[in-house]
Length: 246
Length: 246
Image 1: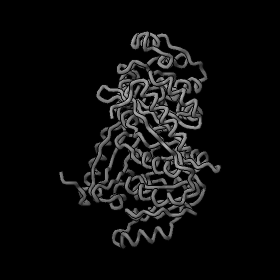
Image 2: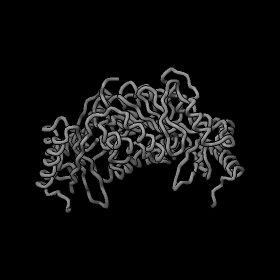
Image 3: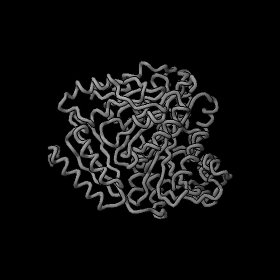
Image 4: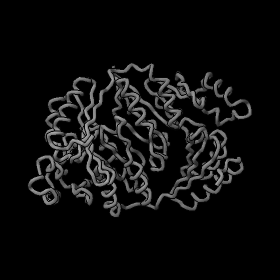
């Protein structure tokens, strides 16, 4: 781990790989972290399988400043993320007294069964991440932040840890839409990229109703360079006659 | 590579990691491959960066029977997937005569510029994947299938290769919805999973309008076991009083 401030996202869950559930957590995390200057460089989606979760955790936590996981911290048999994080860090899985207290208070003696008690288990040394929505906490160990999979819960957890992250300058993004195909935009766009090597300039075509719209995106930490590149892109699009009617 | 029939998906593109674009290709690929008995075991999302694409390709193609990539095969400077696949396989990048002929015929001499000509480049030895939507082909090298990022184009490419894949038995899936929290479902659901070790039984809670609905999913290649597990899950949900009104 270096002093870089970047991140990876690890989405955990068979359902995402079965194609039955479309993830929305990655986009939310990426936008939220981008705003505080932490670019998401990679994401992985793995099944509820110990070997695969541990391997992905180890690969990502060694390479990026922060790793954010979603999913697998509930009370059912397929919720094995805490076990896997403990294994990846080579520490024991223990009951966190504060997590236990919060869960007991929330559910009361009648409803606080063995399954719910599993949600108090964290890798030894973990710090809790508050869950203002449904109580059962996430946790942080080292550079790994373990969050729920339910979007509204994940978003609340992310909100509660964002303030503690040492971000960089916010990543500025400008988008220019072009009513024309990439093949006509490619050469002048490549020339603009060459003039702004510190920015990531991308081209993302889409077809809707038989009409081509290409999103031209400039991103980078230097907001004035991003704005200048955006102006050049817009002028180029105009020159080609691809400006979209306002 | 073994005789297993499983797959990984590699989604390529800065936009997905910036959170501006939500991917829909993974879900489509997972459902389509699931129908022909090829489970998707892992997915990765990487930026338009050579080192990261090559590394992900190498990790995934060694581990899974098939790898399906989306994105990065257009005409712009950030379209570097073909270069990366050639590098991963250690072969040269060459112009494919048939791809060149299709692109020339489609665009005509006026519009067939250097940028569009880039889309004829494939790793040496690659077979083309037809693109009935916008002509520029995808390609297959070894166990890697390289497809476009635009969903409608990707879907057409996948359709054109599906027939050539040696799948296994289709993966059967049954879903039971429960109007109750995972903490109450966990113990009996775990007992059902223990009776059907060959199936993947998962629990996916969601909150909508303050109401908890938990999706209980049984999946596996043995359709009759999946149906039997589904019946046990439905009976258990009913016993707990969590059956959703039809």
